[in-house]
Image 1 (cartoon, rainbow, N blue to C red):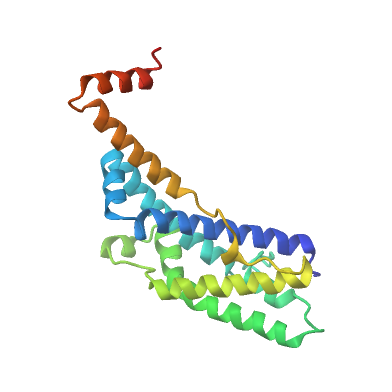
Image 2: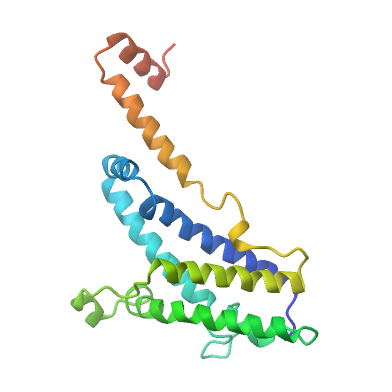
Amino acid sequence: MTITKEDVAIFADYAVYVRSVYMHGRTLYETAAEDDKALMARAAPTFFGDLNKVLIEYVILQVCKITDPAKDVRGNENHTTGFFVATADFAFDLEKGRRLAELHDSMQRLRKKLKPARDKVISHLDRNAALSKAIIGAAANDEWSQFWRDLDEFVAILYERYVSDPPLHLLSVGGITDTEGLKRALSDGKHFNNLINGDDKYISRKCLELALGAQ
């Protein structure tokens, strides 16, 4: 099997996508200001609560998916870090080939922590796991940071070899999440609502006219 430019481009795009979903969750729930969290809880507590769980589970699933072995149990090839380590041709630069394998091994450490959650909670609903109510698949922030640095370098090495130089760096891709816009919209909605319900009747009427499209 020979790796193509398209193989690497598709994998790189997918890595950007996974990173994007991770950043959606991080900016909404982990690094958001308390005021922003309060706005989400006020606007739609059930939705934003469920969304938090959905994003966590989805990122765990995707990280496990892109770090799966090169082949599944039926012998089908997986488009994963394992596949590229096993197949990429670095005969002309053995050091880069060794580095690719090192990065893959490093990413496997986070995968090892996340995989029980993927297997017992996300991909399947294991009865014992459900009854125990134990938290499965937790990892520290520094472990996540190390994973993204590893994946960034992994993609860059492949991209430089098969696609173009300078390579794509995952951590340098801009506009990877637009959740700041969502938080601003919620904040603007709060201010608008305060004006509608304020003591100044003239401003309240004008705001209502604007909201209802009145001339």
